Length: 228
Image 1 (cartoon, rainbow, N blue to C red):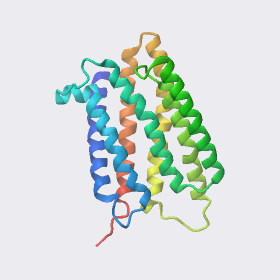
Image 2 (image 1 turned 90 degrees about the vertical axis):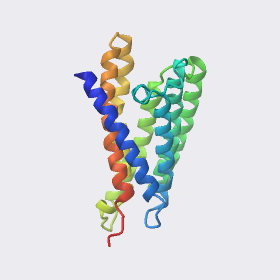
Image 3 (image 1 turned 135 degrees about the vertical axis):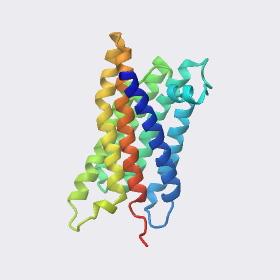
Image 4 (image 1 turned 45 degrees about the horizontal axis):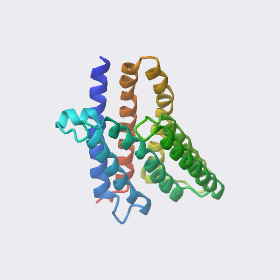
């Protein structure tokens, strides 16, 4: 049963990621959409590219295993994606929040994260799963997400949230990162106690959460489509 859920979660995640990329390419560069959306198709393209290269489910489905003899390559690419995602999300959030203090705090935290990531990678190698980095990235990004919500609902003028791209983008990012924090905090514990099968099955949570986030991204990309 758990294997079936994991399979379904991978299929759903793969379909929604492709839909999000297609919507991003079609709509993020339209004149009626804000400039901060232009970075998202690039983020989605990199994310999908890494999955095609190293995701075991996709490798089996596509019969494409470029790193079959390099098992550490899979973990290495996922580890490198973590700081990439941190920088992309930070760039986007800096465009939609106003607080100079929060921006300075986030920049300081990113610098500390970079030092930790380099030190961890040197000590244990990029081929060692760095779940701590994912948790730290999530905590750092959640800070400007919460700041955005505070600033949004403190505005004097009313905002039509249904047609506000930044609201759906931030909601998607916040939902995904808040969901995976418990998963990545417990995965190492499960692996250490011989419960790697359970840890793998619980990865379906990550896939479903990411699928919901992609749906919210699609809504963000398309919510300002001009009606005829």
